[in-house]
Length: 277
Length: 244
Image: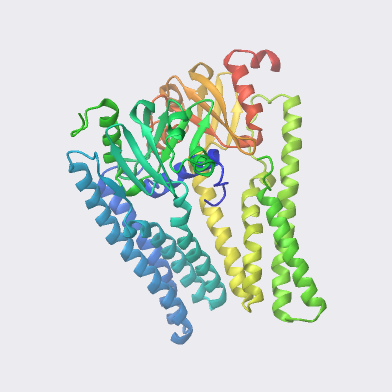
């Protein structure tokens, strides 16, 4: 993310944590109920969408010819479309989360992020970029608005790529551990290796930090069994003297709701998962 | 980090290399106005990259100096602005070649838009980081005073269980775990529900027990190992002796 060095593990954790909070609970003084959160999200989106619209209307009132405001309207329409997508996808995501929480057992199911879920983050970037570009275009600086929007669009396109090397493509909770695929490599985190789970962020947007006893057994299970794949997984597992080895799973990793994944891992660790003998 | 070219150096090389290409194009009178627009962005990019390079060396020198000195007591220590500006400038340096490309293709305004977008994004992320992290602190007799945006709290020395330096050669941060957070949260000033909740988030209270505090690289303008050592000295009671 911007302002930090995303390639280095230490910075990555802090940035992801801040990102989790900024998306999940922008203001901790707000009520924690779903209704309060919805109201907060609604206010935020109204602001993002209404400010450019107010600007366009003001420009029309001042007497700016409507043709000159056409680019601003186009950017605003893009922002609105992205916002609508975000809201619809968020509702769908919540429904998916509820369904996953109701599942009796998560064992043996291959979870992977659906494309519509990947696009949610892109929609945020497009919406903000579109709204900012609309404001700038209202002042007649269409070129600047184009550059601004293109940067956000590029960022939106890159967002799924950022995750490819750092987050699992799919996750399967197996009787002997968690099988994951990151990039082209697959590996198994045995239950006996997981020391504890640290939840990160609020309930509705929960990431997990898996604290491991050691990374040796995980690295041994990497397939394909080559140095490149092992090195990739090694960089994924943060090692520090204070914590030991840790594997960070961001909210909705592999399309799995954080609380459901946490429950599945805890059941696996205790050997109580239904379907496990 | 060994063997890897730093981001600042990469940016400097990219900006300088492209500036060389643009200067050659200008020399052969190729491209005219567009090339000049691209050159402006690249000159800016080169200047920002140079700032990043200098910052890296100044930080190294500062860390060396701090290792030999001691951390002052009862003084609010902050990140200097010249150091704080580093992340913004580093990203602007990286965006400058993209802006130059837009300028070279005929839209200087689009290039400006690229730089504005990168600047706005960096500033926004920086704002969120500042909201959730302790960026300035003071060593006091009773404990470590930490400052958030609009509030402050005191961590008694006896509440700190351990101090660790995390990260690799290029990125270090200090993590200290706490025995308890009650006394720290009780010391929040102003003692409003909002300030208490922000403090609880910054103390990682909701994540897991025991609560821990993360101080980013160069928090309060002090090198992470020096800061960790100074806190450790205070915990074992050596810090006060040194300052007297």
